[in-house]
Length: 402
Length: 236
Image 1 (tube, chains in turn orange, blue):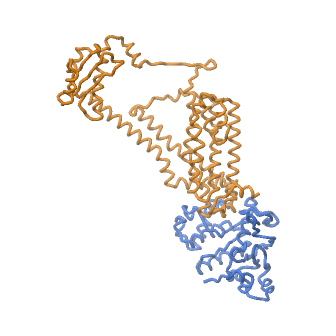
Image 2 (cartoon, chains in turn orange, blue; image 1 turned 60 degrees about the vertical axis):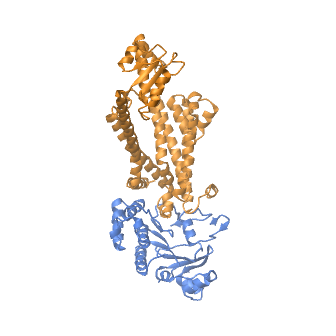
Image 3 (tube, chains in turn orange, brown; image 1 turned 30 degrees about the vertical axis):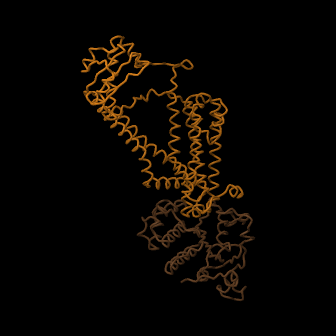
């Protein structure tokens, strides 16, 4: 293994030199940035348009059978009351009137009817806005501000829950261990293809014989995996750093929620379990992807298996509510302890706090043993499938070669 | 050595003496490359092993091995110097030593100006020279060359033969797989002729010739492989 460092440095250096690595690394923050910009400019434009709409004057009349509308307010809006609904609607139709609002006797059981001249998809909303304001402001003086706030759901709540005698916030508790789950998805999604193709290059370039007579297959594979870990870390940093900077400086501009990182609880037991689950899961999927890459002749063919591997990560998400509400159900236990589906339920259950220490240990052991088997398989496949340039190595061939 | 139900190498045993050039001869499909790959552990042999000074060979035994495989290939997207330094380091050289070795060799084979060129921008012959350079980077004690001059023009073939001879004079043991009878006559001390995975002749060139009534190597080749329409190759 004395060549591990050489393999590691070579793999890291040459990947960092590839434009595709930086394009992929930069693509995510750029896309996120573009999305934020679109949201920002869209919000700005919407606010501006709404303000303009609010100030736009249009002629309207109303009929109030509910008795709720304040007559003075109607006059302040520059409108008037009419009794002939049909005539008012005809005035709107022939264009002599911009809008007509009809407030029925029972405004809850029946609809407030609005008849208006088309002002465009966006500007048509002004009619309903004015009809609503007229109704709201008419009834507002009849109730207290408190009642208004309650009815409008603008009352703020603050809750404190306790677990084992100390304050416990379930949502805040899941943030720190949940980061490992997000990181796992991110790394596999972004690096899966690179893992798959990491060993096919030696085959495609026909450099395999020189490699296998210079270093052990194990050294090469482990060196490649270590390099992938570092490259993944670099890529995460490329995403994370601009995201954090953007959050700090543009939080107010983009109306993002204000999260005080110091208030995030750090449960050391759950974080250690999350870290161990993350490491063993990552190694399992890395081993699996590298093994697939070692078994097939070309990177193109290897990439075809990526969707299959990703399915093991996404299918458990269909049972996500079960992971939270029924952690002891048979399906959840099966998905939690079947190696290929285990990472998601185990990490999610740990994040929400329903993974027992016993289940966590069993899960980590299953994932670790599976990872060791996958990595051993990857090395054997690479060693014995090395010269299978044009065809896939079969499991039969692999296990026959003792 | 079996591939599925087919035995491709059978009861083959030979010694290569320290410091000699040993010729490994045979027609296409006679089992030369398979034997070499099995000896080096690239293929898992059904039985048998390569021993160097009595010790079974593996890449971790510390034997300084230089192997030029029949299948040519390098990391195509990397520069010549980067690849040579990488392999030099894998063979136990420091980065500085590997760089010095690489630059000296590239100057020798007139590729000094290609040091920072990507491998895939080189011609086939130039890539082959780089691969030979990698093979001999650590001044190997055991040099196994599988058809090293295949595809070379006469000038470069001569250059390569000189380089191989230099290494042999410096004490390297060379196993030389070839069809080229001229190369065999010029370089080899002893030879083995393979047919269908079995030895058909084995010994010094004189011993082999005398066992075929002092026929030339060309005639011996034709006699052994004539029924396969095989022809010994001659340099152009």
